[in-house]
Image (cartoon, rainbow, N blue to C red):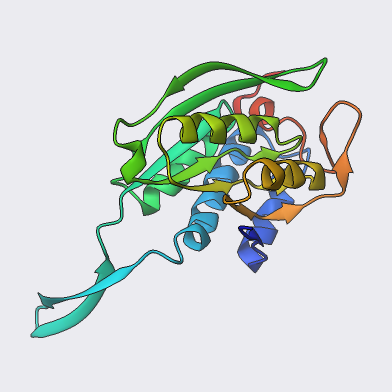
Length: 209
């Protein structure tokens, strides 16, 4: 079974504390989410293969190591996943970007898909699926289902905060998918929100209710 990585780097934990704070406004929230996504992306890409090559510096020749032709796609789950995309693209500017639209029906807490637009060469790419909150796991599982149905082979899920229930659901349905997180919180409440969490990530990101 694939691993669950909880990244406890001091900068990640510091920024996570700030983004949780109810006094943090939409502008700061967006900036923090982008920064957290970029920091998490360092860990998601840690195992990328390297190849040696020779370059010419201003002084002479040097043997260097560079990422070996890795093809990546960043797939945010709409709408909150959009807030993480720019941070990842700052590290991986050549990555292609797809979008999966899923909303949660508040009564059965079941995901409902309304949009899916993905790169045509999906099977050839390593996929980073991003959604800030891994709560019930329904949206993440639906997103992974869509990706696998369209030929994706290597998928990594990146979230800021998860509930144990969401982790368990993803691991049960997709045990091959590695999960990268900044924190695992206590539990879900009766409405499917993570406790203590940070509230509704989409609303805080875009200033809506």
